[in-house]
Image (cartoon, rainbow, N blue to C red; front, side, top):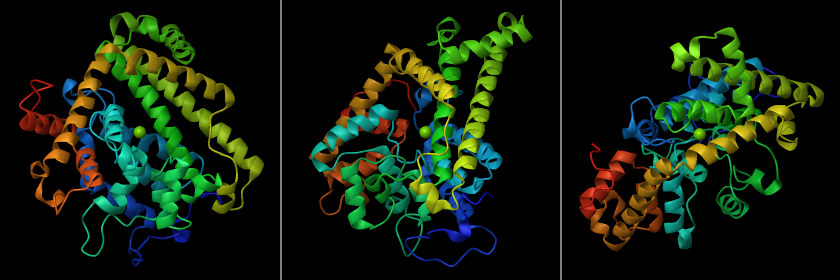
Length: 380
Ligand code: MG
């Protein structure tokens, strides 16, 4: 590993000290704890863009997280960073997502406006720090600082100040001092972006909401689409899915190579002696300026054409309504909550934790049970 990589033997440790595992590094152990958590299993039924019941082949939060881990590991290996830490962060990065994607989060944030708000990055941290109940002596998974730091991808300053009160010099500190996280955390962020840009194109075309004609407006897509039409002229007409898969594969590879080359250049130029120097430096894992612009333009296209598509919006609008109504019902009538969330008077935060932990279909069914109305008829 490179001198700027995170070394598990020099981890800043766990909040509660534990003896080392005999056969695994601290970061491998974190990854394993995440995979065995119940929040991780629930990702399979949580929306990425398309609701889970819309089709079996669309990405869910789980398959998205696996794709992020795969891309992240392969870039980490080239850059001689710690693959296990990247994998742990990638598999945990979306644990705090509510049902129904960002619409669910926004609804819960609005419900919690007077009680500290709701934000999915902070919730992911809350899941691994407190909400998982698997150990006799402590709440949460007791992960290493480096894994927790990577999970808390973003944090508004006022919230970071609150975290800092509870954990001085902890995972909130960098948002106050304007520092960077480890290179592994920076890399996982970028792997997340590369993964969803690519798989949302694939899911968008599969769903019929994105057309190839529209996608050709995006320079990055158009470039590889043209390449594939030259190397395999008949493919689009005879096997359109293979054509698309080949375009997306080439696009993905190009972005991965770009990150590796651009980051390698910056790392060699700056040669940070250790991880502490990485944290004080500007972000070192990044696209080249040209790829940054190409990726931004792809993202703008997906926003306009897919995430804001009336059909996607109508689904997410119903999701938003379910989250909001569930919150109101539990606030009004705590007897509707499971026993462990009730005692003695449920807090707004406890209700938010409960709702955020729901899968799409659990929320749909729970809403139907409590209101007698079905906003997604036919969901099992
Ligand atoms: Mg993600």
